[in-house]
Image 1 (cartoon, rainbow, N blue to C red):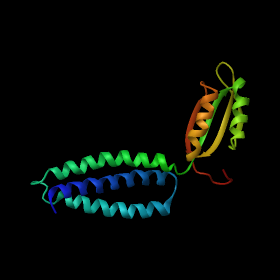
Image 2: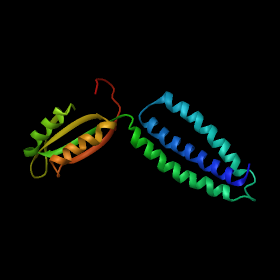
Image 3: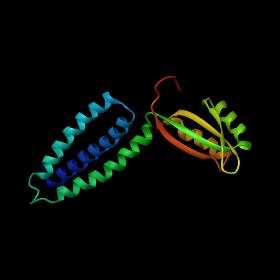
Image 4: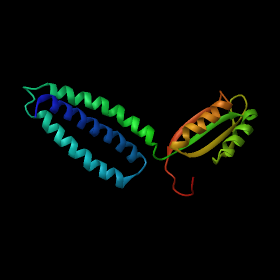
Length: 168
């Protein structure tokens, strides 16, 4: 195999390795054990083969290192991109609103088919309404767009959750 092909294969393998690693981190946080285990197996195989390829003849071919580290950087970006697009799991949006805008927002979000739990809060200067919206990550941007479109001052907090009972 010529050097260019080896550099390219190292680069692609490292992108896969790091992208899988990034994705595995998300799966660990979301308690997805089975899929995480399979990905760990594949990732480990890619890592060992790639590392061995880079280390072999490293003194005479330092461009393998360059292909490796560039693959790491691109793989990290690609892994985050995949996570964003796949949007696996659930989040809890906590929305803090002024009382005057809350009723319309609650109605609109519920009309769109999302469940909203409403709590009363005491702010420093005035009363607040706190909305709790458990939502699939794939739908999160839609709900945020609705809220931001109706209240520029809404404080929105996003937390990853694991549901222990009930349903979305």
